[in-house]
Amino acid sequence: MEKIKAKYGLFTALSLMVGTVVGSGIFFKSDEILIATGGSIGKGVLVFCLAAISIIFGSLTIAQIAHHTQGTGGIISYAEHVCRPQTACVFGWILAFFYFPILIPVIGWVSTTYLGMLFGYEFSINQRLILTLLLMTFFYLMNAISYKAGGMFQNLATIIKLIPLLFICLVGFILGDPSTILESSNYTNAVSSTSWLLAIPSVAFAFDGWVVSVSISHEIKNSQRNLPIALTLGSLIILLVYVLYFVGVSILIGPAEIMALGDEHIGMAATKFLG
Image 1 (cartoon, one colour):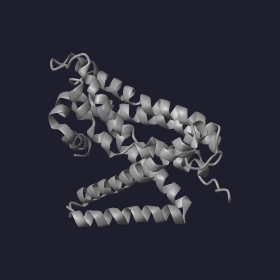
Image 2: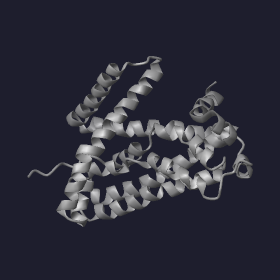
Image 3: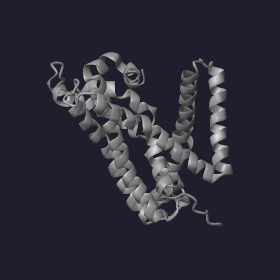
Image 4: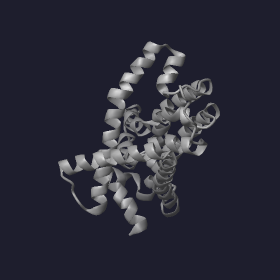
């Protein structure tokens, strides 16, 4: 069987890891976290760290396996390497008939939602279905025809997604009041000592998707070195970006106002520095 040519470097592997996980959902988590923690920014940061345990230790585990194998198939290959073919078969069926068939259309559907919001147009159900199918087809063909175009788009998309998150963080520390972090721990609406942990499952979904990055393990140059680096460094970058954004937007607007506004708080944040 012909060996698949390695095409992607470390930066593309890293951007795939970070870009797959970091999405629009993080913009709408701050209010949920603050409500669960009674407005405490410090507990909110702790929630992010606890929710990230799965991705950090999962990435470290997969990184160790990736270091010892160059097999194709990503997580399926790793399951066969560590466990047995029957386990790999289960992973394959789940990914082929459950995970990817749900994940890919949902991303396409959400994309149509944001396109409609951007251009001030509300698509009908049929229009959204057609547009979702067109988006899926376009990206499939782009990656199938030119791996360079696919890699460049992935790198560019990751950078573009990180810009607003880090920008809001920067604006928050410049225009906001950092003392809000300490003051937020004294709110009278503080929750019970353990109920704030209920925010962890909600935040954990913001870390979903990282395992997709290993699907191109056989296409990464020097994958036994670069993939473990991408998995390890990527998980830490994601956690850092999430925490910086959460703290930045919290001190920019204030925990009490974020809890009152709900998902609308992101519009308030944009108004503060864009007018």
